[in-house]
Image 1: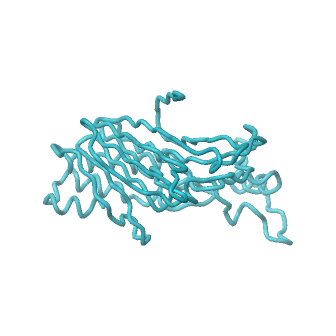
Image 2: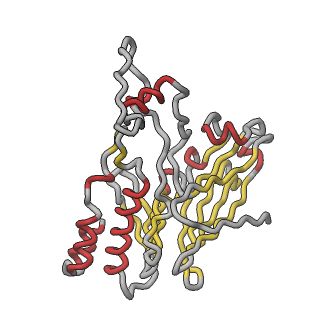
Image 3: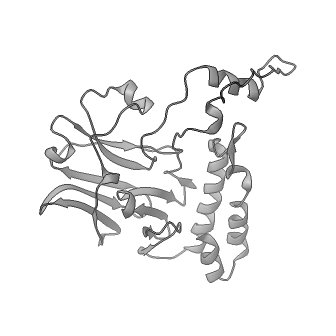
Length: 265
């Protein structure tokens, strides 16, 4: 979306240059050699996008729009002003898929979902690879790949990672199981149809999502976005909807330094 925004502003050279740098392909491929798996490459892309949007939105006030930004057939909510940009997906549980503070040059939702790749499992009958070491005796990337295949497969995430994702967890799920993604949630916000409301709140904006069953609210969440940076999330839920023995859990997956506090109501 930065290219249309840049064109509409008359293609200012500095913003156009940042957009061009953000198109560097190094962080857009993936494989055993790196690509998007390397956080510093993804960070570099988002830093340029933040710079471009900061230049293009200079002096803008708080606004929001509902558009299908990623061409997936579902509309996203895009909130922005001269200091930050946030994208939420009502169709995927009202999750925050991008949250960039321009001054920091960071998209705090820049994390990676752990998924199974073809090279994680060796095809049946595959002969062991020849080991290659460099002059210092360090194993090559191919040998590391082979070692990974012979040991425990990497863990998977049960759902795509976003800045915040809400779910219910069975009381038997311990920290080790949670870290491995070795569980099925008793309830997940992504499986729930949510109503959406957006309104101004002082110098910021509040986004409210609500799930109603048989006329009864079973889950409500509010995201309060502060101009200049900062999000406050509030939750209310019906225990029967989450699971009578389950625990409500809001998982935060973030890139870059962030201060997180929690207060029970």
